[in-house]
Length: 337
Image 1 (tube, rainbow, N blue to C red):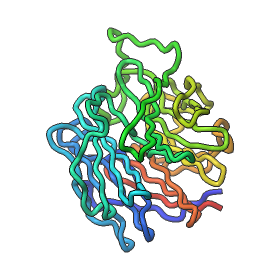
Image 2 (image 1 turned 135 degrees about the vertical axis):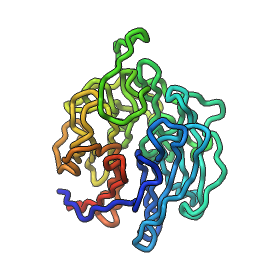
Image 3 (image 1 turned 180 degrees about the horizontal axis):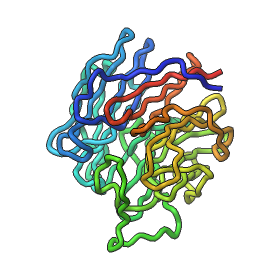
Image 4 (image 1 turned 180 degrees about the vertical axis):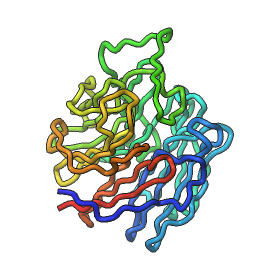
């Protein structure tokens, strides 16, 4: 059973007209670090990556980390405990289909950052994590959920066995038999304030990963009105074709965390493609196939989207950050009992 222990905003004021796509990291001595992107509107050249730290119980002012020249998108944080550094992945580019992935590192918990470097030299389309957190496997390999948005959307698993220095991309993970023709672009009218190019395309993107006793798995955002799942039984090298679950999806981001032998899922349970990003709900499952709703995190009008889920087993807490009406990033602490 879950119960909300606290709810707060991490920003006194957004550094842009909108803010979106948070990623959260649990650091030492109860401190937290959150990244997001903000600007005048999604896809504009002024979209930049910002970070904000919780230190001594107070959220600090947002810190500019990366931006300028073109839109910056979808930051993902990874606390690399072995190297004692906080790693930040993010995308750059005006065209989502041609994103490049860059990385910066901090050895002082986000106070200062290294110069950016390309994650995979010559990358076009976006390697490494596209939106959700990376997964450290029991084998020691690092797995990132990647995807591309070129006609038929496809997902991938990007795998590293050397701590993120080099990466090996899996075969595509795509819905079989899905039709898409450039001359018949799928453009859906929606009030969601995404970049217009996002409305074109069809398939699965933005995997969220977990590992259990059976193998490595992912849940995927889709354009088909349902959440899809794919499985790997070789430590994340190759995944099955994705298959739909009896879970509605509005073609918006989701996230999972596996803890206490239970999978928790945060998503918008709305079946319409590009449908409402409210409510935002938390569900749970013992097998990653059959889910029950634990509680609604938000139910009012507006956008509540792109959740990031983390767990502190030491505190018996789930942490959830998400976009709150594109005006702020909300943080909830939920007690596990």
